[in-house]
Each structure stands twice: as C-alpha cells, then as structure tokens.
Amino acid sequence: MAARAGGEVVGIGLTGQTAGAVFIDARGKVVRPAIVGGDRRALRQSVAITERVGRDRLLEITGNAVASDGLASTLIWVRDVEPVQFRHTRRVLAPKDYVRLMLTGEAVTDVTDASGTTLLDLRRRTWSGEILDALEIPPAWLPDVQESAAISGGLRPSMAGELGLPARLPIAAGASGEVAAAVGCGIVESGLISSSIRRDAVLFAPANHVTIDPTGRLDAGCHALPQRYRLRARAAAAGAALHWWGGILGGHFTRDDLYQLAASAPVGSNGLFFLPHCESASTTPDGAGGRGAFAGLRAHHTRADLTRAVMEGVIFSLRDGLDRLRELGIEVRQVRTPRRSGGAWLWRQLQADIFGVPVASMAATATPAMGAALLAGVACGRYASVADAARHTIQPGKLIEPDPGRSAQYEQLYRTFTTLAPAITGNVESSTRGVAQPG
Image 1 (cartoon, one colour):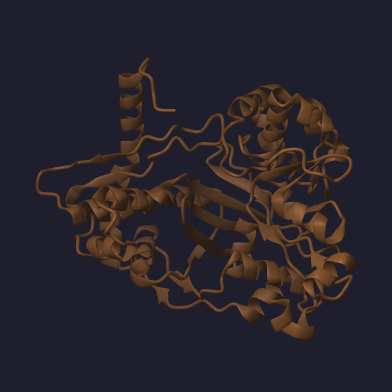
Image 2 (spheres, one colour):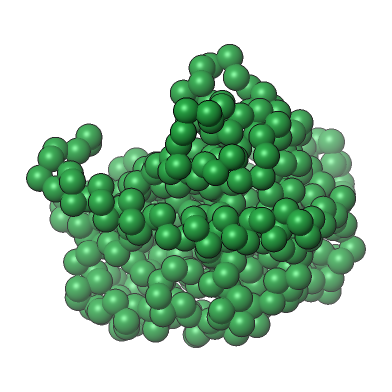
C-alpha cells in the first residue's frame, strides 16, 4: 500500500477489535498471549469487581456494567490465575495500541477504546482513580488517553525504513473498530445511527452528552468526536443465528440461498417467531443467559417460514434497543448499514419496516479502515473536523423506505415477540435447574 500511494501518505490511522489486552514487561516484551474480545474466562472476576465498586457506582462513572472481556476483568483474572505473569507485567495495552507501540514507541490509547475497559471516567475522559484504587491496579500500567483525532506519535525511523514510509509520519490515536466503522458510515451527527449484523447485532448512536441507561440495556462510551459520546444496543450472537440455521439446513445452502428462502415467505412467517438468543454470550455478570427458540411452530411451516422467522427475530431483538434509545431521548431519523452482496437487501428492508425509519445502504468502503483513515486525515489537518471529513467523503447509497402496510403488521408482531423471551427463559430455567449444561 505504501508503494502504491508513493509520496501521498500524510498519516496513519489505527483501529482494531474493541476489547482485548496485551501484557508487557519492563523490557517491552509480551509476557503471555493476548486475551481478546469475546473471551469469558473472567466472568467471576467481573462479578467481584461489581461487588467491590458497586453496580450503580460503576454505571455512574463508566456508563457500563462490567464486561468479562474488558480490561479490568482481564487484569484481575491474570492476577488471580497467573501470578507469575502478573508480577512481570508493567504495561497493558489494547491490541491496536500494541501495534502503535511498535510503530512509535509511545504507549497511548484513544478515548473510544478506553471507554470499554471499565476503568475510564466517562465524563472526564480519563482513567478513574477511584476504580483503579478499588481494584489495586497501578495507574502506570495504563497508557495515556487521547482524543481519536489527536496525533499520538510519529513513525520510528527503523519502522519507516521497513515499511517504505517517511520517518516521523504522524499516527493518529484512532478508534475502536466499532467507532471507526461508525465514522466510516458518517454517523457523526444526531439522528443518524448505524446498524451492523455480523456475529452480534449492534446499533450505534451518537449522543451530544453523557447518557447512561440505568437499566444497563445500552452501553455508553466515548465517540471519536471530541467531547461527544455514543450509545450502543447489542444483541449478542444474534447475527450468528442465520449462519447457525444454514448449518441446520445443510452445508449446501449459501447465504444468498437463505435470503431467497426468507424472501419467499410472507410477513410474520405464517405466525412463526424465532428468539435469536442461541448462545449464553453475555459478558456481563447481570446479563441474561442465551435461550433461543422457535415459537408457534406448526406442521404447515416450511423451510422458508423458518428462515424468515430467524431474520425477523434478529431485527425484533434490535428493535428493543432502538426503542430504548428513543426512551433516552436519542433521535432516530435514518439507519445506515454496510453494503453487502446478493440478497442482503432483505436485512435492510426488514429493518426499515420493523424500525419504521428509512435505511440507507452504505458504500463498500464504509468500514473501520475508512474511519481510521478519516481520523488520520483530521489529525494531519486535511480535514477541519471528523464531521467535516465525513461530509466530504461519505455519501449514503440507496435509501429504503418503510412500507406502511408491512410496518403496521410488524408493529403488532413485535408486541407479541416482546412477551416471548421472558416466558421462555423462565420456563426453561425452571425445568433445567440442577441439570448439567454443556460447557
């Protein structure tokens, strides 16, 4: 890439997986393999952190419940389980910030990654002394916290020669993958939110000030814009439900085959519902366990009905998060989604009809890498601000409007859907109490 760009490279942006921890000793050497996002080994430690600091106090300071894959929980797990590695540790970095350390020699993170650690004071956008003291975590182990569009350092001459780039090339603080993707979709102003359906299903909404959901259903954090924040609704493992269902049908079914099956079924899947909570994927101590189910199954239902019910169930689960955003005063006038190939238009149409708002398909370049590049452009002065960078480079694609008739049908169906999860979860838990579970 450096060779193709020639002399036009003016800066580097960094992004990476939202959660993760690299443990480094006094010589700058890694002391154990990184523990990355989605790892749940530290669930017991996350419970202990909640008990020590207090759930309400944690929400007040950080905006979030404790996540088992967050830096705080991971640190305590290493202390409890791997005392030798813990004694050698002198620095802990997110994966992308370890890359920065190699490029620049600077130990720096950005506010978006820091706000997912359970250690950041969300309002002050710096590490919380109160939480660090309570957990006995040395502040010197943590990197400096900078705004996403700040210059975090320059490219070391030794690395510049290896990469074929100018020495001292500015490197932006960057952003977590989730926030960088939102920047790449132009989610930098009120009223616009992004939707991503990958393994998880996620809604991302900007906020002008710190907004904390006391129920814990929404996560709060820092946006890449200075002094701006974000809220996130997440349906864990819901996006993986269609992949799971394709495996049940047989390996010869491609994703586009599944889309065609679903499109051939009517709205509401002939009275069939699907709860996409197929995995106990919660990384928070107070999160609900995963209990998936088909509800209303009858002999007349076809593969097409079941496939459409899976897709509708994923969007219904996101609708709960959308409603909570609105309850907290977040305006939602347009949803933006990454463009996918083949029949992925059905995901967008379902969102438009179930959410009741227009859904825009973004260009294929609306990715975390694009967001990181724009942040680098702001850091290097090519753009006046993150919002300015988005205005100049990002254009929404085709806009899908909600169909009034389908939206009315889905509104009634959604009301039924919201009653299913509590009933099914309660019945299954009571019937399986005392029975050994897999894993």
